[in-house]
Length: 202
Image (cartoon, rainbow, N blue to C red; front, top):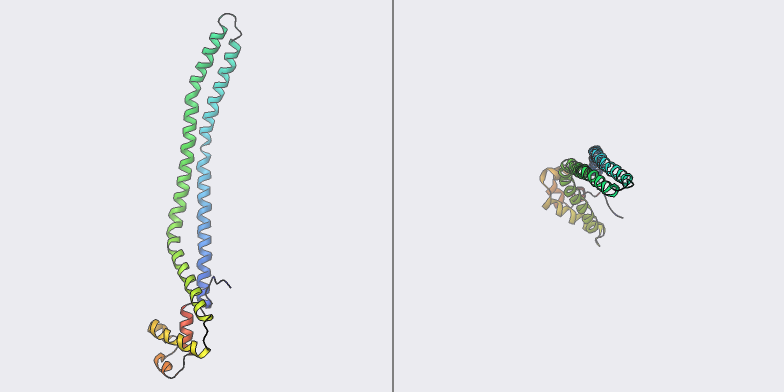
């Protein structure tokens, strides 16, 4: 069975709370970043309006030029001149509109990424290594201890020995008032429990 959390209730509660808090925090800032992008991108409509205005000027010039083409003698020349003039007038509107739209969309994306990055990256840089280390520790301990081919007494002695060598004294004293005396007398249960709880097992 795939282990995602510790077996020790207090450790499991801390891990679950950390997981939920991370999901909520990341989701909140991702949604907020999307809203920032949406709001700023809406201003790009001004660029699209300019482009539409330029296109309308071009269309009006083409329509007027087409109408003047029908004027006898000078029609074709006047029509081409009119179409070209309107086209020249419309080009700045279209160009500025395109550039404004592109700039505002770029700013929207950068600000959205900045908001998400500044608020999420520091959190994840602390949460992910901590969570990955705890998960790897629990899984490795479970594999080494639960699948070990040893008698229960031999496993308790091995765990008690590891606890004495590895755990700090305050942690040992939380489980037994005389850790060395218990070990010497063959009372391994509390020391073994201390070792198990230190790696998230029961």
